[in-house]
Image 1 (tube, rainbow, N blue to C red):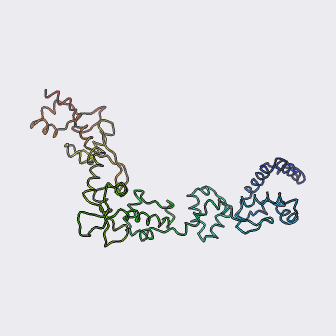
Image 2: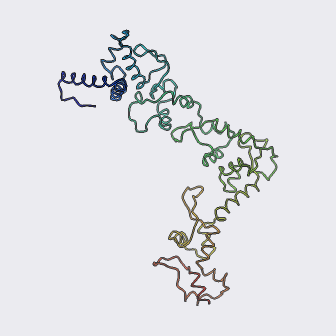
Image 3: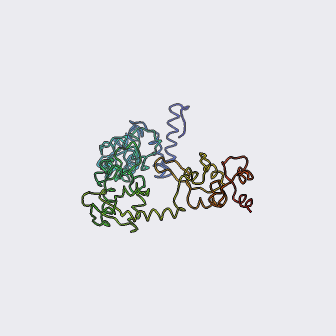
Length: 387
């Protein structure tokens, strides 16, 4: 907006009239744009239409309120007001009764729904209704009332973790596993919100599984709960649920439990899924330390260093509990390592060498650029020496 603070009062008035005429002469869209700019300039907590629009609002709400010739102009000003302020349905603005609310502010929505303004704002920010960095007072933080009506209606119905567990008949650990694998997602992912769950999501999951479950005897030890299968096999609950949905796993239902806790899977089928997963990943994984013991090198971190320098392949996975990436060794990784390298214990196993002193004395350890990887030798050097 233009700065006219250096002009005297009469000059400011003349300039304001010129700007107003310039906007009005270009049609309704330009008028609405100019009015919106005036509304944006008034973002204080008590900046109601009268304060923001000044004499224009006063004249149209009093002197020109019942003059038919001014009706189109009153409507333009009314449209600006309902577009920028939280005008409720049934409220009269410049002689027009508002049929439905167009805008809500955090304050007006809080008053209508009974939801605290701080909690309400978290949901609105999460939904994209208002910006996280909007520093205006809550009376002026407005959003499209119709677009977010369903959200406002839904927030009071949300439940906390205990309510979600009760709704679907699940334990704390079972719910946590479903969330960890994305089978269930909260309505809002914000640790400050204590009731982020749609109970209907949990009920729908149980109903879906109920459709494919068959009754089983509690004493039948060939079955185990989904949570027990997760812990025993290290398969994620998400993968187990996916297997149930695809028909790759069967689902049983115990009569002595209710809800999600009653569902069980066949142990042998879970083991098969686990074996298929390991095969797809290159075989069973062992830790780098366990592989070191297998080949006779116990120096801590030697394999991680060797793989990190690109001399041999390794498999990296997130630790299931700590969340940090760890180095593992698959069957294919071991095969590639053995193709290139030999350790002293490997010499005895592969070549039947009981006395390796002369061989070890004659060979140089694998130490490119002076890097120390312990008693590790290139296979081609060993085989060439033995020939």
